Length: 90
Image (cartoon, rainbow, N blue to C red; front, side):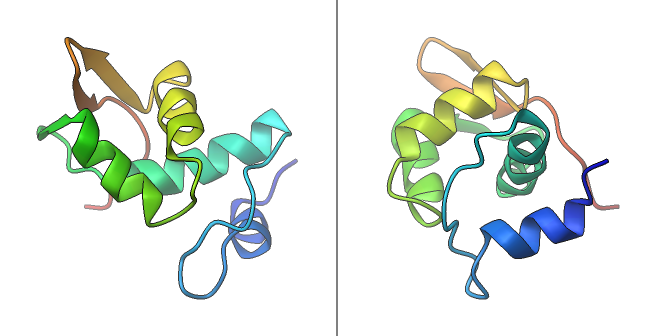
């Protein structure tokens, strides 16, 4: 079983930078969930805004954006993105 806290410690630097994108699906889901928390539920984002947010974590923002959409953390329509999954702090 994948320990989410261990995955986050392994893949993120102390400053929040993503060291690398996990290849194992279970670990990638933990990382994607963390990235999805950077987007507010109910907000709409243009692709350029999504790229700016993701670029703060890792230079390959296009891959991160694609993974977020493919795994249901973000949804996309006509170039507009919104958060569609992931954990939410209450």
